[in-house]
Length: 364
Image (tube, rainbow, N blue to C red):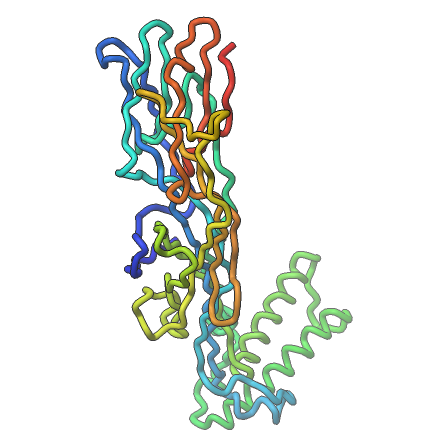
């Protein structure tokens, strides 16, 4: 998989891969030596946009001018061409460090609370070994081009000495056509049992027919041409900011020759990213309608915003995703003694992509 390096106005570009890398989970226990404090960082939600492009290369055969004469083929490939199109787009999210949201939670001594953090210091859980794995959309795998009929060993076997030595294209075409008709007759004789030397068993028969088919395909390719296709998969990682809401941004381009290129490479047609905040969360309020203040030394977590993300080109939408993003939400807090109550200490599990609580309960 390739990763495209992009510089997009007002979009911060981050490294990484399309799928979540294997995380190193680190366990931290609040102890006296650390003043019962554990530092951590809330996430910002990044978008991993994986783009599959299919490249198609069409090459005319040496005898394309004679395809109609010998085989009534009216539309052989007559001109070489290369085309590239987007065939799949997948959007995933993941959490990255938000340097503006660094905290230290200080617990009271007594019950020994612990936290699980990922290798970026983002909280995964408190007082439990449970982990939340955000669902990810499957990303495509790149597919290499298969050899054309003219790139197989059968192609060399199909060209007899007379065809190769002839200096006239018209004569070579005539000889190649004659050889195709010979191969077809041989296949027919084998199938009907009229061949002078029949294969001794079924496996030999299968091999003989396969050889004939491959040689015929190679010779026919010299008249009708060849088509070679392969796919490339590239992931572009984007970290949206508030000022980008509702704006259409170019995150990559598709060149008809080079495939996926950077956003500033004007040889390609643009691929756009648009995201819209559909619901912003609010901080909790008390019975008087007043916003509940962040608790002293509290544990911070995210209330993420709901967002709709779309990737499109000039022809329309290529992919869309309704998701949540931390940086457009708000930060709330839990009292630290929630997790140190000797009788009923709480536990919490977090979504590392959004910083939200996904499970909150009592340790049994």
